[in-house]
Length: 123
Image 1 (tube, rainbow, N blue to C red):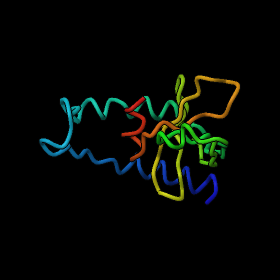
Image 2 (cartoon, one colour):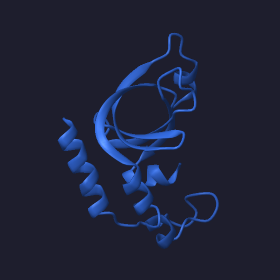
Image 3 (cartoon, rainbow, N blue to C red):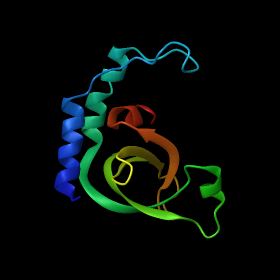
Image 4 (cartoon, rainbow, N blue to C red):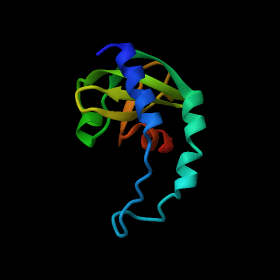
């Protein structure tokens, strides 16, 4: 997979976004309306960057967060927003979220995985 393929995937995800409301009883709280979720599309579009590979420290699970030595993986950066990076993991086919709050170390994955827009909404 190269940067062009990742960008093509991102563009496809945006062009084919379909809102699926969570089934009643499958989550805590009140699900967002379709209008609210769709209101994040322009924000995501503004945050998109030309995809590039970057090393991330794994922190999705408690075990990964406590691993000594730390565990790392390389993912495709697709969007950047204040304090966060959205990435694409080609091994799982998922988008994910990492924090960038410490500029002296690689971004740390935070256990948010899923579709392109859903992950961005989690910021």
